[in-house]
Image 1 (cartoon, protein in one colour):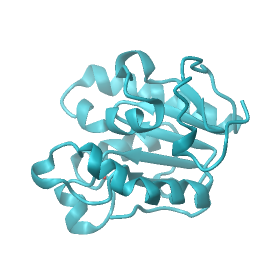
Image 2 (spheres, helix red, strand yellow; image 1 turned 30 degrees about the vertical axis):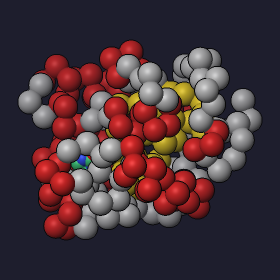
Image 3 (cartoon, rainbow, N blue to C red; image 1 turned 120 degrees about the horizontal axis):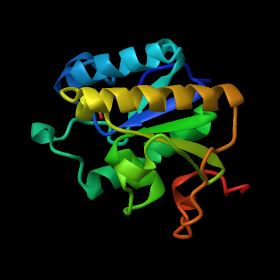
Image 4 (cartoon, rainbow, N blue to C red; image 1 turned 180 degrees about the vertical axis):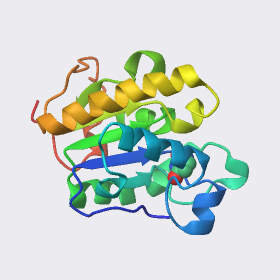
Length: 181
Ligand code: URA
């Protein structure tokens, strides 16, 4: 399931991996978590159809387990190619798995969500995975705030609201271009 959306999208959302429903339909985020993602996007004034949505891993891991490092690595060249050809202004990392892939293994979702990070010349923005908020209204409220920050960032076009300086274990290798920062 490669992903769906305009090939010149200003926003790319990267989730973890397709789930059962996504596997059946061949579309990302079409199950319960996907419906919440759509509601949150549209609530912030971001049209879902304007977003390119994909995942770190392109195939559904058995029994919905998180993708393992071998699977992440196997799919990474495809994700890089997608980033390179779409060239989004903002890359939104939905959940721990994509955040780890782009920001390193030390991610703390509770401190990093709702902020942006310059990596490899790209602006990455971290949100919780919508599945985490499915049964927790408090997290839905947090995600609403994060989505409006994401919308402001998109409207600004570029520029990170918080630039993590501790990324010396540069993740430039994950991106096509070296950082301009
Ligand atoms: N969860 C994800 O991370 N991606 C999907 O496409 C669906 C659910």
